[in-house]
Image (tube, rainbow, N blue to C red; front, side):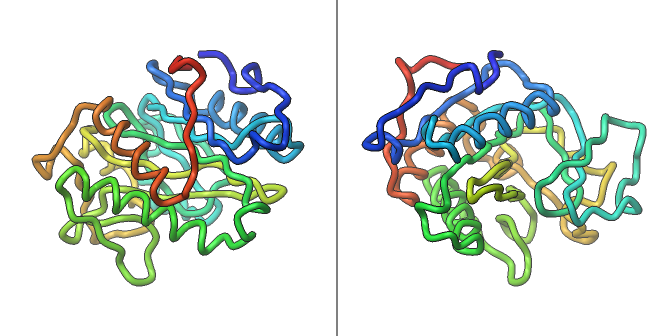
Length: 230
């Protein structure tokens, strides 16, 4: 996996509204992903790279957002634990879960973080609908739920009005791995997945739906450089 910073090219202003669509076929170490995101978002802020959505998977890891309560880390030695700058509490990432890091220039999108998060929720709901799953919001909670169980999480950070981190959608992960934490601080809320809902679990097929729904919700053209993966 080549760091995103190595892919940056200086672009003319007419290309800055295009969103580059990237995918890593092999699991990416969490610290490497964060470093790559930081490099890329800095380049976006300098208008040296296009906005970007990066699809990937991680090896099993627990991450602690800025509101994390370490009393909610129930199995502290089970998987690596990383403190991270995204919003939210504890979450799990691992194989079978599609992570989408969304790096957008919010200075060109209204500088409204709440609206941005709502758009991420709209994106997930639209993608789930295309997969035959009815996603829903829960009042006072961030993320997407199916019949009372959480299927997707959202955690973002904004730096110089460019977003970092993004969303995670449970496609077919080992759901028991969530038992080592209180996911997102929701003690009595179960987690679910596309597999548990009897929906599509082929990651490539899910990616196609995510890309189509992203274009609809964010009104953006998604571009892949010769359809190559990273």
